[in-house]
Length: 141
Ligand SMILES: [Zn+2]
Image (tube, rainbow, N blue to C red; front, side):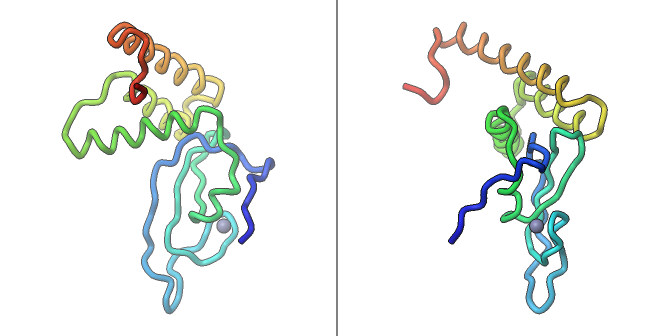
């Protein structure tokens, strides 16, 4: 099996917002990859640095390079899903990070402004954790 390497001509992924299940491909696929046109079942929707929401199948999404903040932003989206399930309130900085991603996807702000906003929220979160836990980060012992 070959490993897919990201293609530098594709826009960088900012955040994955959705995964659509279009059902089995048998006998005919009901959905097609917006990226390459192949029939598939799962289509991922993701916001890119160009401020557009792109779509690609699970395999093809590996071809898209990732913004250096994407892993941290993904963790916020995962936390939101968990908190929604438990009916807990997200801290304001997490909500602001998610809102910044949606503003980018809606074309209200550009990627530079998105990065400024996300970095500012992460800085608030880190300052809070430093004050509360004396510099120890969550999940590290
Ligand atoms: Zn594709």
